[in-house]
Image (cartoon, rainbow, N blue to C red; front, side):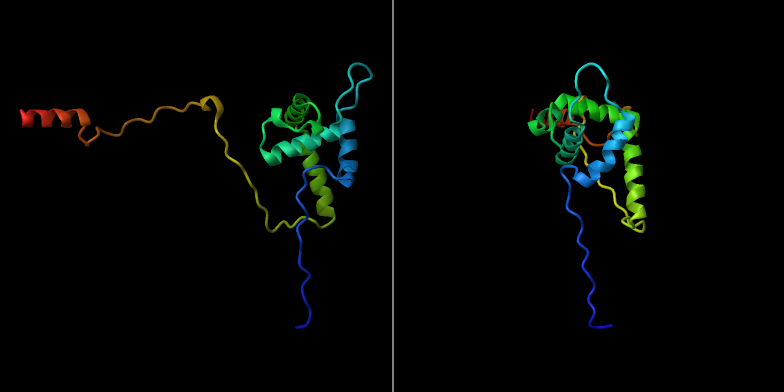
Length: 153
């Protein structure tokens, strides 16, 4: 049909904070895995912590440079570490991916991964020294200057 136009697909906007609909799915999973304790200090608002983690991962800022609207930076970092070690992000990812796939929102034919390289703080991991293949055939500066001095004398 020549007169028919395809509807242009518009990608969803990049999220910097968790929308309400998404938080309604995430919150019960967090509450089941990490129920609040009956005694002791009140924990930070976990929605703010999730928003702070998203902000940190998207912006690349240092943990201690998180804006105050996300709460205490060390508490947000502590929750990030806890969730990373416990495999909570993988569990959450699989739940959201399953729901998205059921809605037909995942195109399995084409996927992409993005990454970022950063400076290795404190030198990173030390690797073994590269072995020399053979003697360097290039003349050395010291021997060149000595040869010149011999010729001029």
